[in-house]
Image (tube, rainbow, N blue to C red):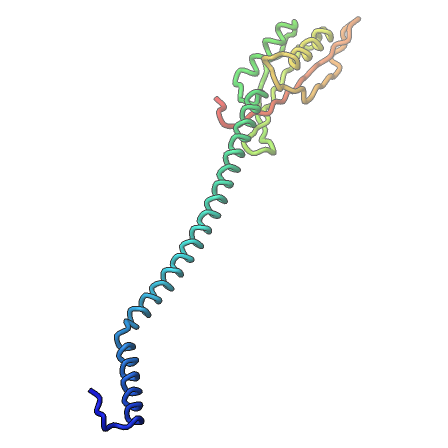
Amino acid sequence: MIDPSTTASQTEQARLELSIAAVQRARANRPRGLVVAAGALVVVAVIGLLTGLSARAAAQIDLSSRRADLDRLRKAKSAIDELNRQVESRGLTPDPRMAGKIEALAQAAGIRLVGGVSDTSEVGNISGMVRRMYTAQIQPGEDPGAVMRFLVSTQGSEQTRWLEISQLRLTPGAPTPGKTVWNTDVRFARMERTEGRR
């Protein structure tokens, strides 16, 4: 109760003290620590979210880069496979029977060879490739037309695919009355892969 003997200034003073005490009590009742903790938690969550989004974006960029690399590798592999198929079709596969095929073509053209066809290999400038050389010495005195048919058949036959004439040497032989005798040596060359040679 309010004492009637108090003056107005005292009443005003008491009212002011009561309102200050009420404000202090209201402040004390507010959960300031919880609000600060909740605010800090929100800040940490936002930072975590931004970091996660940034990491996700970087991972997506890395993934798309790796997918592009994988696509390039697949295209390169298919190009290499296609080149290998072309090499196979061009006849670069080693053929251990090539000397015999050349001899058979000579026989079909009516040409006799001295000692058969010999083969040697030379290392090429291309890695994994060898230049296989085949040498045929034609019996002296053979018909020049038959020799030409033999040479043409080696270039046009499917059996001797990619065989090239690398050297043709004609030298005059021992003189025979009424006939010119020629000694003929032919060197053939063929590029072959070194692996797979039997």
